[in-house]
Image (cartoon, rainbow, N blue to C red; front, side):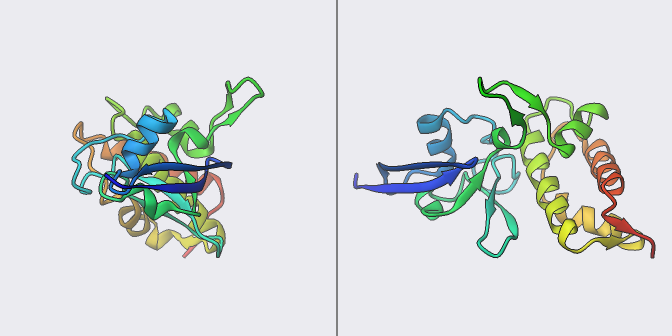
Amino acid sequence: MANRPLQLTLNGQSVGPVDIPDDLPMIDYLHEYKNLTGSRLGCGQGICHACVVIVDNPDGTSEEVRTCITGAHYFEGKKVRTIEGHATRDEQGQVTELNPIQQRFVDEFAFQCSYCAPGFVNAATVLVEKLQRQPTVHSKLEQVIEDSLGHHVCRCTGYVRYYNATRNVLTDLGLVKEG
């Protein structure tokens, strides 16, 4: 099996170059090479979105990318955030503060088994960042949330709580205008 070097920015830290197999899925790179196991392998087919990470684009936008069906080399030179990269940490690496989405999900018990939670947190984080650039109006809020979270699968049927927590954090952050 052929190897190639991979270099990227992962949770704000430069990584690599490190030689990895050409056909290594990103989720395996995260789990096996970086010990970042928060992104979950759910379906292995790109359907459930438990494995998504956030890619920060050069234009300032961000997007979700499924890691179970995307090779690690796709991320060459990209800025990637995993679920482990959201919280604020102290010098010893201990979490000192969750991001607003994480905190709201905890406060509202927006998960049951939590297997899908990393994907939902990443999706809601991308939505917050999108609406920080261009807020939505109240009349379109439910559709905006559905468009962002609707492709994520929760086998415990925790959708109502995920959607409610997302709606509440968007409102709290002033990202929903009247209309």
